[in-house]
Amino acid sequence: MPRPIRVLVAKPGLDGHDRGAKVVAAALRDAGMEVIYTGLHQTPEMIATAAVQEDVDVVGLSILSGAHMTLFPRVRELLHVAGRDDILLTGGGIIPQSDMEALQRTGVGRLFGPGTSTGDLVRYIREWFAERQPQDA
Amino acid sequence: MTSAALLAEFRARRPAALARAISIVENRRPGFEAILAALYPSTGRARRIGVTGPPGAGKSTLTAQLTSAWRAAGHTVGIVAVDPTSPYTGGALLGDRIRMEAVALDDGVYIRSLATRGAGGGMSAAAADAADVLDAFGFDRVIIETVGVGQSELDVAQATDSCLLVLVPESGDAIQALKAGLMEVADLFVVNKADRPGADQIRRDIEFTLRLRAAPAAAVPRAPAPWTPPVLATAAVTGTGIADVLGALDAHYAYLFETGSLAERRRARLQARVVDIVDRRMRERMWEDAAATTWLAGQLDALAARETTPFAVADALLARPGGLGRRTP
Ligand SMILES: Nc1nc2c(ncn2[C@@H]2O[C@H](COP(=O)(O)OP(=O)(O)OP(=O)(O)O)[C@@H](O)[C@H]2O)c(=O)[nH]1
Ligand SMILES: [Mg+2]
Image 1 (tube, each protein chain N blue to C red):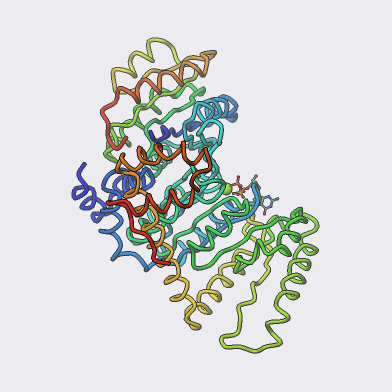
Image 2: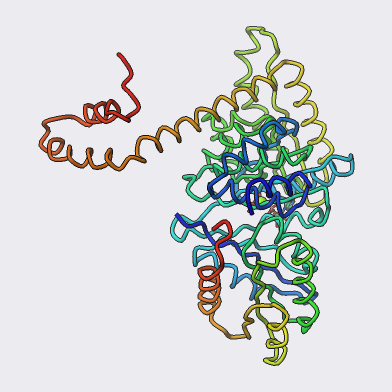
């Protein structure tokens, strides 16, 4: 039996509501994934530490604060230091197209703008997981 | 990564290797038994504490408080937090880390969330294995948090040295469960959210029920004297009462140690462990040979026609060459 995909959903930054992140977490759970939800105000260090300890396949960040150009690269860097370059780093928020492209060039996965259906994210994660070199899967 | 490379990284105390070892064991990936076997000699040092109780009782908040206190005393802590898998989708929302933020960045703390997966409402079968892996990594304390839904309370008591049952002032029905013997497993009762009204009442109810149960035993003195579970009140959000819980856990551990019950509990756990492995091996050995399934399919007509019985078919299956042999009556 295939194991469930494990995803960390985190809400970094100072902005104070996590409705979007909770909707995403619930959608991924309903799609059969194991979702570790860590709550509001997560620092990149907390996110990377949790991702490593939980041995997730995917980290999804919800960023509305505008700090995406620092937060995504910082989490990518910390995952690299921990030896977890294989983790897919994805997410969404209010992120201009040009920033999305710039981030993707630094090893961040696809990013989703506001109003994207959670179904798109589910499909993206599933396809990524299916294509990935089998590690322990 | 090969098992040998993983074990080397594990012994070099790389958190990613610890995390991966738990995954391999949880997923029953090839080589998981070799990993557990290699780690076995390093297990048996951690004190294992179970934290169980109804949803939302404050188990994670309490776990974080105990962890902070143990860290302040210089002990390292590994945590396994088990939440239910949805039987419909196979997915799970694992949210225990939210309440453990205060210890999340501490190098001496490792938190791992596990879903129950196929465990039929009970604790994840992998949780006890994960506790072994954390023990082998060298954590001084290993906490297993599970949501108490009947079976999981028994499972967590089996897997730990001290089992703490967390209730809240609203847990009136818990007293019924106590009477039904469901909570015989608790070594310690904690009435959390004692900042709310009703905490004293439920404490008294639990104590009364415990005394009723203890009375006949007290009439017949035996050595060692039985452990009477203390009933404590906490407000885990503020830390009120945590020192009492720590004291009671130490007292319980001392009791277990001095009476020899600790060794007894741990030996019972090892016995159950071997029985589990034998059960699994026998099942695998029985059915890995496709001919067994084919032969069974060939018996279905006779079974349906009531010409033979399921018992006779099972015995014949076990007695086949390559079967497991029949117990002589
Ligand atoms: N008033 C009050 N609230 C508390 C106390 N302890 C925990 N809570 C709150 O109760 C809620 C649930 O706490 P958790 O620690 O997540 O409870 P849990 O038992 O781990 O929950 P599950 O793992 O979901 O079953 C949170 O909102 C906590 O802040 C307490 O002592 N008093
Ligand atoms: Mg919890």
